[in-house]
Length: 385
Length: 221
Image (cartoon, rainbow over all chains, first blue to last red; front, side, top):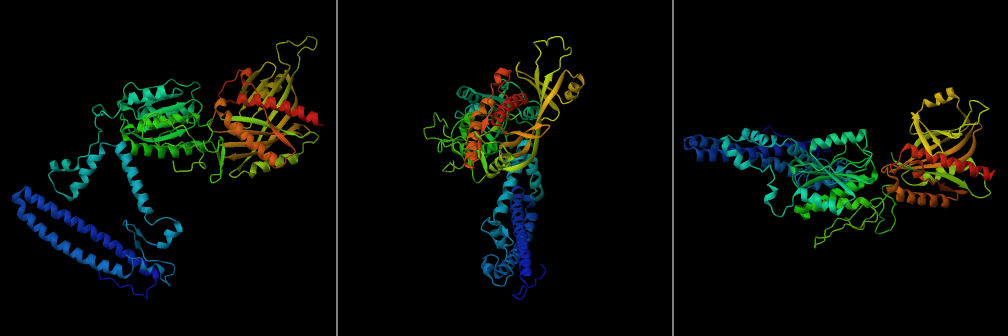
């Protein structure tokens, strides 16, 4: 490791900050090296356990790794001391007088490094928000990958692990095995079948037309809706086989078109929902899309919360509850707010006239005959449901 | 297409309509938070009268004597005809106007232009305009078109439009304009039109509205 210039208190704050950032980077690399070293030691131990012939080579590797690890630990200790002295880990320098408005980088409890503490305050957000956003983005991308390229999943894992661990390939799958197919729905008694759920919703809400589509079928239909709105309400188009159903479309004539996607296809697990006007069409019409109209945008945002609630409180019946809740929106443009008794209300913060777009979704413990009958304007919802 | 309501301004008894009212109405619209101006709009209407081919013969009774032709601001490539007596509407390409000029079977007797300002307010679009009598540009009335973008069903949007109308009327009354906006009530079924809103509905609304505007302006003169 190259010798570091000590940042004296005579150095300008920008230099101190830059050096602190540099040291943090180095600390991160050292930690990574230590992790790799630990992996290698483990690997060596396991190999020597498997294959006594290789145990001498494994012992050599272990000793070598041990030396390297010791060195890394010493370096890490030094860097840590430097960081501590410059106030990075404690944030003690935040209130330094002559710091030119700059502050030492701060390591937050969740591991995020905030280069400039004042930026946190300016942005009005916690320093960890960038980490959260990256994490959300990663989750979104990996969800998408898992959905659209399920065959890539296992390959990726095998490839990345082969770089660092020289294991015989047959060992890997057992450690990494993740069930990619959902268990056969028929075998679980509690989980109702998709066909039954849809049938019961049809009887419950006769004003809503329900159709099911495979993913590609829906894309084609969405495009065709842009070109030509069907004049008369189409007849319900329920797929013959429910194994491939990925999109459920609910249409209340003249009121809404709602799309619910299921993941994995053919299951009864909803994973996204979106509300649209019946006169909208185009490739943006899907369960993760957003309507161009304000009223439907707000209902969709609220529906996301409802979906999360149903998934967490009653996962087996999440789809049934969601579909019932969606069907209660047939009166979106006719039902007055349960609080102010008006249909249209001016939302001051949004500067929009909207009908009541919040329909509470909390489930009773009794769990039957849930009618989701109340509706509130955004401003009239007194609690966050 | 999104549903529309059409209103005209009814001045109070004894007052005359001036362009000041147009400015005041626009001010009311702009007073709502979140309203943004969205340019100008312009539609025009022609009142045609049949020109008999042969003056000596009586005009055939099944042909309409009067015809209204409308060019709408949101459909520049189309021209609509309304035959009020027969309750018929015809939708044609805008070049039909040249055909009419060449044929001379119907002659334009007088013309009305609508022009004014357009506003966007969330899911609503408002258009406030003067109703000008061509050729002398005399102000005959003030109209306001309200469009609700998310819905195309007249039936399903009825309550939303009613409440909007109430909100608008209250705002106008509170700003002490010398009159009120009256909604144009039309029985679309008589014209063979359905629940799904179309330009034909707009044509019928304008036809009806203009009749009321002219009647009220004649009354007040």
